[in-house]
Length: 262
Ligand code: BT5
Image (cartoon, rainbow, N blue to C red; front, side, top):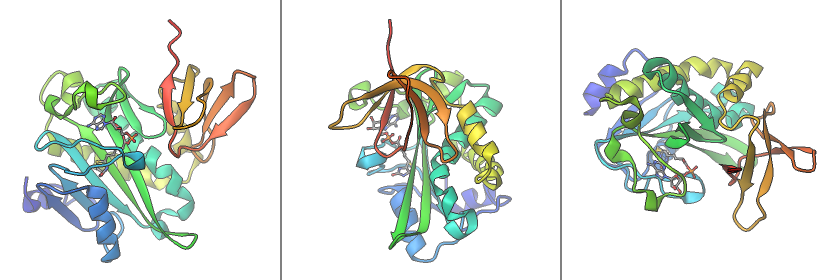
């Protein structure tokens, strides 16, 4: 891929500036740098390889060359509404789900808050990062990483959750750049709904482990066990605890795991 071809392929989408790197540290970091330089709403940074791709809490996100998709979109709060910012993680995950379901016939779902799964294995992750000035969000970056070819899947020893790729589950070749455009189209189609209840309903309808017993795990704290009931209006996770009490949880650094009752 090169920038001219990419710009040409994406020319009919209402994006800001489009940048392409054959290798970059992190597309999120690059997008944040571009915001500081005044990059407009929906500017896009795409990389063929990331050397310091990251997940939440600076966990590593592996993006080897030529086999995965990694990209970040600039989201200006004045264009999406600052209150919608917490929903951006859902937007990214939902867009990937929409495409895998509709265009590839795959049973994708979302492990709250930010992972896309197929048959219980993760093939995409979303990382939303916000830039603050005082107590005001200046801008947000929505980053998405998708394992496309089989070679993009890190060895299991490097992971704390099973992983797969689109090609593995699709069972045939997948054009990365076609997939990129499809995800961007799906994301842009969902964007106008971001502050509406329909958006939360769609996010919730695609959640993995609905009604199942799950655990929320946070480093240094006792795991929280409960039945997964759904989402509230802010995208917080609703659990019914073993005591019967219903409680809401904000994503933060929580890891969600299914409780194995076998
Ligand atoms: C995520 O974090 O899943 C968010 C990943 C976001 C990556 C995109 S790529 C474009 C943009 N630029 C960036 O620098 N980041 C974003 P989290 O839920 O914290 O999961 C991280 C965990 O996923 C790691 O600790 C690994 O166990 C696992 N992991 C790392 N690389 C993986 C991969 N390629 N496939 C599946 N799992 C992976």
